[in-house]
Amino acid sequence: MRFLLMDTCGSEGSIALADTDRPLPIVASETLPGRTASERLVPAVRRVMEGCGWRLRDLNAIVVVHGPGSFTGVRVGLSAAKGLSEAAGVPLVAVSRLALLAAKGGEGVVHAVMDAGRGEFYLGKYRAGECLQEALLTAEEVLASAADGTVVVCEPKVAEALATLKPQIVPEPAAADALPVAARRAEEGSFDDSALLDANYLRRTDAQIFAKPRSTAQ
Image 1 (cartoon, rainbow, N blue to C red):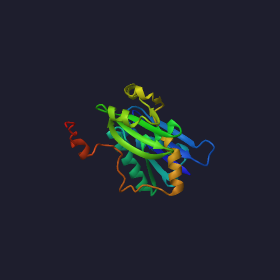
Image 2: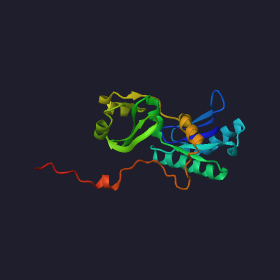
Image 3: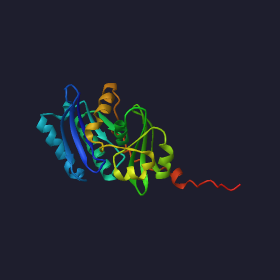
Image 4: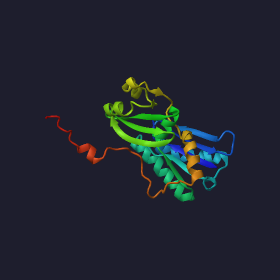
């Protein structure tokens, strides 16, 4: 199966072409330096596709990491993936960035944690690839929620903030890391509806924002 994979959520964007019928499935990849995805994503896709002699209609799926992460980056990647999917009539697979980070943490319960800014963190709790929870939490909430299992981070500042949990520091996820999830989803025929698919921003709900702490007075 052939895939185009895209990730524009982090400090750097990346794209990859993969063919699971080959011994080394990653056929080509390219990094989009800094936060340049909005200008470079589509030209980079065209360049790697032409370099490999692939056409969009040859793909089994277009795969996009749809957040959480940079608001602009998430939006750019998701919009491009939807456009290419609809134009070529190719199925779409969306993958959580937290799922990719959790996959680097090994077996058992894994807590993937990323910086969300303003003293908050994105947390994804996974077990054997299954999502148990994804949420936007404060540092205190993360420390309480991630006490069980392995904690995996890809940012030094997050590792420092959660030092008491002894987190594993791993490389930041890239587009190619989405291949195992994408291949499994494609085999199952589990694709996303581009008309209904939204970005995985992980915002707090109104109920959480406006909730008043309970009084401890007796």
